[in-house]
Length: 284
Image (cartoon, rainbow, N blue to C red; front, side, top):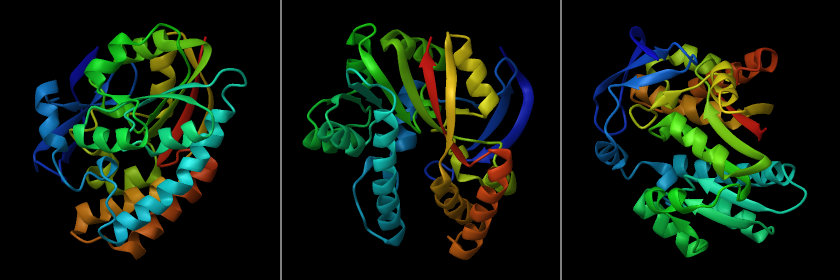
């Protein structure tokens, strides 16, 4: 399935290990694959960092405070989106739920919630808010067929090993006509092309797969699911550009990153190639 000689780019793990990885083109679907991919047992050490912000509620500095402010705005938009995905029952599975803020908001708005979070520290925080979050190993394998109206993965699919097996599992867990809502970085965006190997959303080797719109469509169509709508995540360009500047220059450079992010969103207004995209995918 993969032509391992088709190298797209070499990228460094700036966050944890400082190791170098390759991004190779998957010839069947068109997404990029991180190579070599760590084993499931090895992957855990690449998340072992206090700076991995989705696993913490800390607000130690301006960057983290801004992140949480933007996340609060984004949570309300996510809730509004999933509310449009069903008009009957409201059963939600949030895969990779982090510290559980989205689940809590959904619960407060009438959703019957289940969360999956493999990171023990984040899961502990999430369960203090929701008490319905389990690990990946204990959670997904015991859930009933066709039991969810909506399954969400907010910047999670790119982290999952055994990609096609997970896609089949999500299709199995969704009710007929249920929706899968997935947020993903887009390596076809202007900021990705501008920063190249310094683009923070490559985030190797935690991101095992790197998607474009066409590759997402091909992957899910193979398993009987079709994209209904694609929505932009305009804030992501600013967050990613800020981190990318730090990778590239050693400094956050907020003025430069703001310029790049603004230009990326401006260009995407016509091309629709935003830094990150939300896909609403219907189970057919």
